[in-house]
Length: 445
Image (cartoon, rainbow, N blue to C red):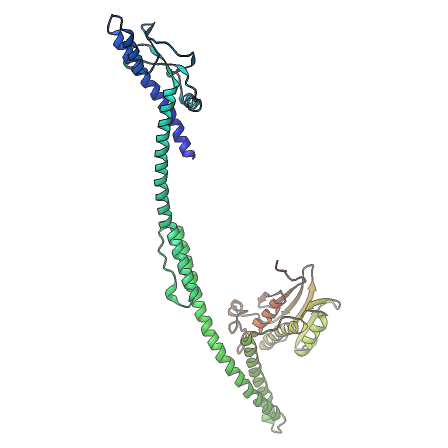
């Protein structure tokens, strides 16, 4: 619309100026034909000359003499005078708009310069009715042409958009729908081919995401199959090891000193094997019940964990507890005990592996939004590989023979409370874990 206005209005103004210039030229030609003879022309011929020029009067000024060359009766008073010699673009536009919006047939005076320097000026009187009809006819032709150009442009634009944008987008959608039906099928991964740079970047990103997802699904499927096999083996192996554990308990009572010394090591080895099978089965089931939230004091729970692991304030691996006696938490006490017990056991085993003594610190506190429990030790710290895969099953084990399931299960139990288990420090001076439990669970609106 703006382009139409910027084109149409100046075109109409220029058409009006050209129309008036043509009337001046015709009037000049008619007046020059009269000036070539010294005789007086007949009234009929004068009327014919004025009719052909479409004017009422013609005044030609030559040699500073204003001369009325041709004249006829004027049907009404002159409504306005327009001097084309002094009219600028804005005045031409304003005058053209006045003619278009005023349907009255008025008589106007037009002044201009004669062509071919045939005088100083030429002046005519004429009606605005024919001018307005010519301007309307010209405007209709301009609008029709503009509409035709707009229609052709719209068709070309539609074809361009369909070819360059809509078509590639539909192709991407078809690939996404086909891929969603069978994401494991690598043949359904999109091959980027869009000509538009932005769409091609989107296709390349989609291709990368699909390949990663396809690879992850294949890996998950293999892990699921492997997990099922491991679960079956662990179940049968646990039964076998349980029987072996019963016999190992009897061996401890043997009178043979060599057997008596070897029996505890055998019992410990079998116990670790049973615990490994049970942890593997528990992780494979992925059936941890939701936490049963209740209020309880945290310090007695920390003391139970330390006592269960055989820790004291005077042993080789001593335990320090820093928790207010009146600190009350809202959580599942059984699950929280499992989490803290797992962290304490890992800390104790890490210190014992050094062959030196050490300290395990258990602390608890709260602020306005959450409760926190800190489990720290003075052990050797975690290896870099263990830090990278700390909460990944079968990959985050920090000691030889470990499975890495303990921390995975512990983190899962904490997440079930809406909290977070994170490693805050691990270096040559020791390791520290922090459990965060929110006081108010986020509500889904």
